Image 1 (cartoon, rainbow, N blue to C red):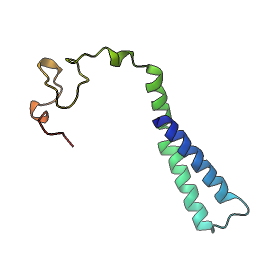
Image 2 (image 1 turned 90 degrees about the vertical axis):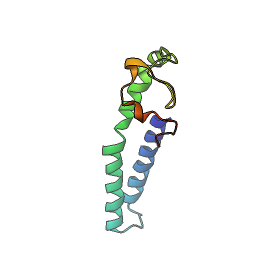
Image 3 (image 1 turned 60 degrees about the horizontal axis):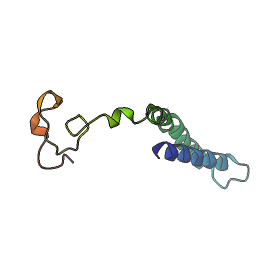
Image 4 (image 1 turned 180 degrees about the horizontal axis):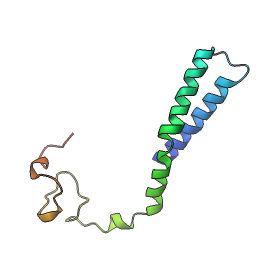
Length: 98
C-alpha cells in the first residue's frame, strides 16, 4: 500500500506540474516555480522510496514466518530472555515506548 501511495502521489504531482506549465495556466511565474520546486522535491526525494518498497515486496514473507513467540519479532511488551535482547533491559517496560 505504501508503494501504491507513493506512485499515486507522484502521478498527482506530475499532473500538477503539467497543469502549472500549461499555456492556459492562471498561475503567475512565482507560483509555477513553487509548484515545480515541490514536484521536483517529491520526485527526487520521496518517489525513490518505491524501489525500497519493491525490494521488500519481492523479498516475500518467508523469513517473517520463521519467527516464533520466542524470536526477535515480538510485540514491545513481550518478555525477552537471553542474547536476543539487542538493547538495555530498561527500555522494555510496562509502558509503550511512544
